Length: 299
Image (cartoon, rainbow, N blue to C red):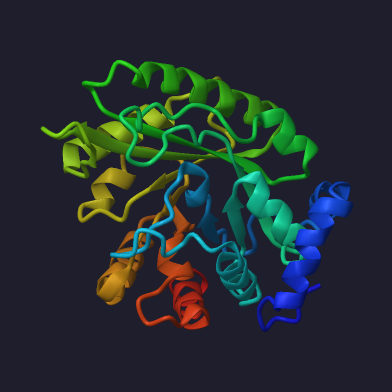
């Protein structure tokens, strides 16, 4: 178990040794961890997103390798999960198994990412294929749900394949009564062939409408979207619960917190699912960033 003060080098070395000598202990730790209800009395969630590295996204701000060190990432996750009001974490199998073995997921939600095939910077970046968990392994691993991503570029012929795969994943998770987190983002391809996020109002409304209709049941679907300026109109596109993402906060942390608070005024916006904004805050104060986010969500 962790002591709430972070991860020691000795404990991290024990984890590395367990991966060599007792690999089964990692899967057992995840399956046997102490579980909790999905939401508490206020019906809101604050989940830390730690699935970015599985897509090759290891940069923070202007540092292209700022999130690459695994000890640092785990230390920050352990510290965040120890803050009361942080409900859980979203990650790939390597991250979730590390955290479970360290005891950091007891009494916390664990959500497994499913499609991580769209490697950052690749010519085929928008080809978000299923390369991590599937619904069967989400259930078998004792996770609370699965997360998928759709990046809608109307000019990319590979997007329909992603839509089909995500719809199947949503259906499979719903059949098992597991949470399906669907991150839906409008994209376009610029003149240099790079994938560029496009959060214009009409495109965001379209993305939310498309994501809401995926799968044979939406009963267990939650959406993950950016806290855009016209969030009230975007949120009104669906009856599904919505979690707002974060991204790099940088020196604009106050503006991001204000955008979160504005979004949470909408009745179906039910929390936050930020990643680097909490893991790598501009001022370096991980616990402080977590406390501020908890106040926005649960305060």
